[in-house]
Length: 339
Image (cartoon, rainbow, N blue to C red):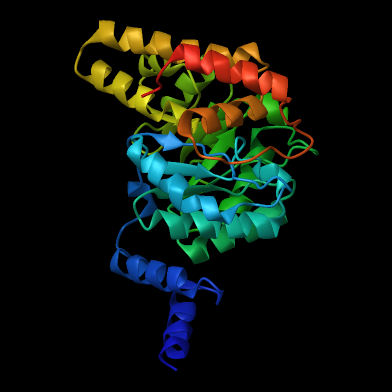
């Protein structure tokens, strides 16, 4: 009876839908009530953001038994945030229900120790809106979205309209535009997107810039530095981004400690140590490149380095052959510790 009354109050105040994960929704609503005076304009990512791989079983089903162990690993390797259901997570190869369940699993396992930025991008705006509303109901810290790309927006104005439709599904949540043009094929200047979106998307707080053009990333930092945060989507180019004033990475989960040591050296003024660590980062990333640099390689590398069995990838990404996996494992052993 008490839960029923509490639910009715929370639903009216925060538009929370009843779900099996009632305790998570209830605790989130309480946190939201306590912090209701905090505006999304004040949201800033600090530290380092992991881009975790989704753990799958050998049959392709999501392995929900791994999330607690996964969160523990990320926290122990200097990550403060997780960018969930993104590219490395194969979010676009998951159903809407799987993405909802996975998001809930991350929120539940994190227990507030790891902040969650949930990727809600899909092949169409309505599915992304549904994921955004669900994100709001389960208590994620922010959302991000790429633009639907089978039918591509012709210009900045249309892209902004698409992002506005998605961000507006949860206007209280901080929202990041996810720019990854070499995947989506949308080669529209992201700095112009931010300029046009400034007055059209109130909860827009920045961009996850995973495209490979560093000048575009730098131009994004100039649009509205007080409001828009530029997150670097890279597994290697940390020092080059630092020189542009971009200091928060969204990176593969095996890079956490190396990034932490690099950033600590850089902030202390020890440029030589920072350069040495950056060279180690490039060396580890070059191992991935040696075998094709695909998600299947990065996921296998994380399993080898972390010791966490997170399973295979899903088609159309191809699973590693046993021969290639053994060669990769040998190269990582020769590299040594990523700690």
